[in-house]
Length: 185
Image 1: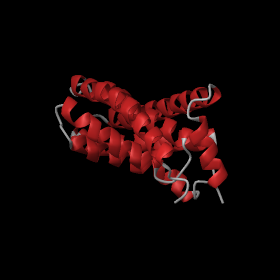
Image 2: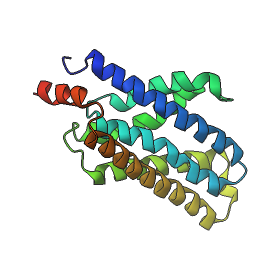
Image 3: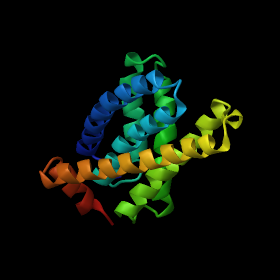
Protein backbone atom coordinates (compact mmCIF):
# COMPACT_ATOMS: atom_id res chain seq x y z
CA UNK A 1 0.00 0.00 0.00
CA UNK A 2 3.03 2.26 0.26
CA UNK A 3 2.87 3.07 -3.44
CA UNK A 4 -0.65 4.52 -3.22
CA UNK A 5 0.42 7.80 -1.66
CA UNK A 6 -1.37 11.10 -1.41
CA UNK A 7 0.76 12.34 -4.29
CA UNK A 8 -0.37 9.37 -6.37
CA UNK A 9 -4.03 10.04 -5.60
CA UNK A 10 -3.66 13.74 -6.39
CA UNK A 11 -2.00 12.88 -9.70
CA UNK A 12 -4.84 10.46 -10.47
CA UNK A 13 -7.33 13.21 -9.62
CA UNK A 14 -5.56 15.64 -11.96
CA UNK A 15 -5.57 13.10 -14.78
CA UNK A 16 -9.25 12.39 -14.05
CA UNK A 17 -10.15 16.09 -14.20
CA UNK A 18 -8.44 16.47 -17.57
CA UNK A 19 -10.07 13.22 -18.71
CA UNK A 20 -13.49 14.48 -17.67
CA UNK A 21 -13.10 17.57 -19.85
CA UNK A 22 -12.16 15.39 -22.82
CA UNK A 23 -14.86 12.80 -22.17
CA UNK A 24 -17.67 15.32 -21.64
CA UNK A 25 -16.86 16.65 -25.10
CA UNK A 26 -16.70 13.10 -26.40
CA UNK A 27 -20.03 12.28 -24.84
CA UNK A 28 -21.75 15.29 -26.40
CA UNK A 29 -20.15 14.39 -29.73
CA UNK A 30 -21.41 10.81 -29.33
CA UNK A 31 -24.94 12.14 -28.83
CA UNK A 32 -24.58 14.38 -31.89
CA UNK A 33 -23.48 11.42 -34.04
CA UNK A 34 -25.88 8.84 -32.61
CA UNK A 35 -27.92 8.74 -35.82
CA UNK A 36 -24.79 7.89 -37.85
CA UNK A 37 -23.48 4.63 -36.34
CA UNK A 38 -20.20 4.53 -38.30
CA UNK A 39 -19.29 8.07 -37.23
CA UNK A 40 -20.34 7.28 -33.69
CA UNK A 41 -17.95 4.32 -33.76
CA UNK A 42 -15.07 6.72 -34.42
CA UNK A 43 -16.05 8.85 -31.42
CA UNK A 44 -15.81 5.90 -29.02
CA UNK A 45 -12.04 5.95 -29.42
CA UNK A 46 -11.90 9.09 -27.28
CA UNK A 47 -12.46 6.92 -24.19
CA UNK A 48 -9.24 5.00 -24.78
CA UNK A 49 -6.99 8.08 -24.71
CA UNK A 50 -7.21 9.06 -21.02
CA UNK A 51 -7.12 5.48 -19.82
CA UNK A 52 -4.04 4.65 -21.89
CA UNK A 53 -2.36 7.84 -20.71
CA UNK A 54 -3.18 7.07 -17.07
CA UNK A 55 -1.85 3.51 -17.24
CA UNK A 56 1.31 4.60 -19.03
CA UNK A 57 1.92 7.55 -16.70
CA UNK A 58 1.13 5.82 -13.38
CA UNK A 59 1.76 2.11 -13.86
CA UNK A 60 -0.03 0.73 -10.81
CA UNK A 61 -2.92 -1.71 -10.52
CA UNK A 62 -6.24 0.09 -10.37
CA UNK A 63 -5.03 3.38 -11.84
CA UNK A 64 -7.38 3.21 -14.81
CA UNK A 65 -10.35 2.32 -12.62
CA UNK A 66 -9.61 5.23 -10.27
CA UNK A 67 -9.30 7.65 -13.18
CA UNK A 68 -12.55 6.26 -14.60
CA UNK A 69 -14.36 6.66 -11.27
CA UNK A 70 -13.08 10.16 -10.53
CA UNK A 71 -13.67 11.43 -14.07
CA UNK A 72 -17.19 9.94 -14.04
CA UNK A 73 -17.97 11.84 -10.85
CA UNK A 74 -16.67 15.08 -12.38
CA UNK A 75 -18.57 14.47 -15.64
CA UNK A 76 -21.94 13.84 -14.00
CA UNK A 77 -23.33 17.38 -13.85
CA UNK A 78 -22.14 18.32 -17.34
CA UNK A 79 -23.82 15.77 -19.57
CA UNK A 80 -27.33 14.54 -20.35
CA UNK A 81 -26.71 11.11 -18.80
CA UNK A 82 -25.81 12.65 -15.48
CA UNK A 83 -23.92 10.37 -13.14
CA UNK A 84 -24.39 7.39 -15.45
CA UNK A 85 -20.95 8.53 -16.63
CA UNK A 86 -19.49 6.73 -13.61
CA UNK A 87 -20.85 3.41 -14.85
CA UNK A 88 -19.85 4.04 -18.48
CA UNK A 89 -16.32 5.10 -17.54
CA UNK A 90 -15.86 2.14 -15.20
CA UNK A 91 -17.09 -0.18 -17.97
CA UNK A 92 -14.54 1.23 -20.42
CA UNK A 93 -11.83 1.37 -17.76
CA UNK A 94 -12.40 -2.23 -16.70
CA UNK A 95 -12.07 -3.56 -20.23
CA UNK A 96 -8.92 -1.48 -20.71
CA UNK A 97 -7.24 -2.42 -17.44
CA UNK A 98 -8.04 -6.13 -17.64
CA UNK A 99 -5.32 -6.62 -20.26
CA UNK A 100 -2.69 -5.28 -17.88
CA UNK A 101 -4.09 -7.29 -14.96
CA UNK A 102 -3.72 -10.50 -16.99
CA UNK A 103 0.01 -9.74 -17.30
CA UNK A 104 0.12 -8.87 -13.59
CA UNK A 105 0.98 -5.31 -14.65
CA UNK A 106 4.47 -6.41 -15.72
CA UNK A 107 4.13 -5.66 -19.44
CA UNK A 108 3.66 -2.05 -20.45
CA UNK A 109 4.83 -2.13 -24.03
CA UNK A 110 3.09 -0.14 -26.74
CA UNK A 111 1.63 -3.26 -28.32
CA UNK A 112 -0.32 -4.08 -25.15
CA UNK A 113 -1.83 -0.58 -25.08
CA UNK A 114 -2.84 -1.01 -28.72
CA UNK A 115 -4.34 -4.45 -28.04
CA UNK A 116 -6.25 -3.10 -25.04
CA UNK A 117 -7.51 -0.15 -27.06
CA UNK A 118 -8.57 -2.24 -30.06
CA UNK A 119 -10.22 -4.88 -27.88
CA UNK A 120 -12.04 -2.19 -25.90
CA UNK A 121 -13.33 -0.70 -29.14
CA UNK A 122 -14.41 -4.09 -30.47
CA UNK A 123 -16.22 -4.91 -27.22
CA UNK A 124 -17.97 -1.54 -27.38
CA UNK A 125 -18.71 -2.02 -31.10
CA UNK A 126 -20.38 -5.37 -30.49
CA UNK A 127 -22.42 -4.08 -27.54
CA UNK A 128 -23.41 -0.98 -29.51
CA UNK A 129 -24.40 -3.12 -32.50
CA UNK A 130 -26.66 -5.18 -30.25
CA UNK A 131 -28.13 -2.02 -28.69
CA UNK A 132 -29.05 -0.42 -32.02
CA UNK A 133 -30.23 -3.74 -33.51
CA UNK A 134 -27.49 -3.76 -36.12
CA UNK A 135 -28.60 -7.23 -37.16
CA UNK A 136 -30.98 -5.41 -39.48
CA UNK A 137 -28.02 -3.69 -41.19
CA UNK A 138 -26.14 -5.23 -44.12
CA UNK A 139 -23.34 -7.55 -42.95
CA UNK A 140 -20.64 -5.22 -44.30
CA UNK A 141 -21.94 -2.35 -42.19
CA UNK A 142 -22.04 -4.54 -39.09
CA UNK A 143 -18.42 -5.54 -39.62
CA UNK A 144 -17.43 -1.94 -40.41
CA UNK A 145 -19.09 -0.69 -37.22
CA UNK A 146 -17.09 -3.06 -35.03
CA UNK A 147 -13.87 -2.61 -37.02
CA UNK A 148 -14.04 1.19 -37.01
CA UNK A 149 -14.64 1.23 -33.26
CA UNK A 150 -11.65 -1.08 -32.74
CA UNK A 151 -9.30 0.90 -34.98
CA UNK A 152 -10.40 4.25 -33.51
CA UNK A 153 -9.86 3.00 -29.96
CA UNK A 154 -6.46 1.61 -30.90
CA UNK A 155 -5.40 4.93 -32.44
CA UNK A 156 -6.61 6.91 -29.43
CA UNK A 157 -4.81 4.48 -27.08
CA UNK A 158 -1.63 5.15 -29.06
CA UNK A 159 -2.26 8.89 -28.71
CA UNK A 160 -2.69 8.40 -24.96
CA UNK A 161 0.69 6.67 -24.77
CA UNK A 162 2.25 9.56 -26.71
CA UNK A 163 0.69 12.11 -24.33
CA UNK A 164 1.87 10.24 -21.22
CA UNK A 165 5.39 9.82 -22.61
CA UNK A 166 5.55 13.53 -23.52
CA UNK A 167 4.43 14.52 -20.01
CA UNK A 168 6.99 12.20 -18.43
CA UNK A 169 9.80 13.57 -20.64
CA UNK A 170 8.98 17.07 -19.46
CA UNK A 171 9.14 16.03 -15.82
CA UNK A 172 5.43 16.25 -15.03
CA UNK A 173 4.67 14.11 -11.98
CA UNK A 174 8.33 13.14 -11.61
CA UNK A 175 8.27 12.84 -7.81
CA UNK A 176 5.15 10.68 -7.86
CA UNK A 177 6.58 8.44 -10.56
CA UNK A 178 9.90 8.10 -8.65
CA UNK A 179 8.01 7.13 -5.49
CA UNK A 180 6.18 4.40 -7.39
CA UNK A 181 9.45 2.99 -8.73
CA UNK A 182 11.16 3.15 -5.33
CA UNK A 183 8.30 1.36 -3.57
CA UNK A 184 8.19 -1.42 -6.18
CA UNK A 185 9.07 -4.84 -4.79
